[in-house]
Length: 42
Image (cartoon, rainbow, N blue to C red):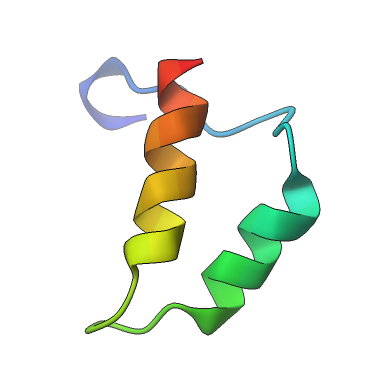
């Protein structure tokens, strides 16, 4: 991964992540951003 970031693996809530991924658009992706940040922080 770029800059040493690990890929998102073993997500706490895969269904929530997938739902946010498919609902995200270029202009509206706040839910996905929140999930990614929380996973990276854990």
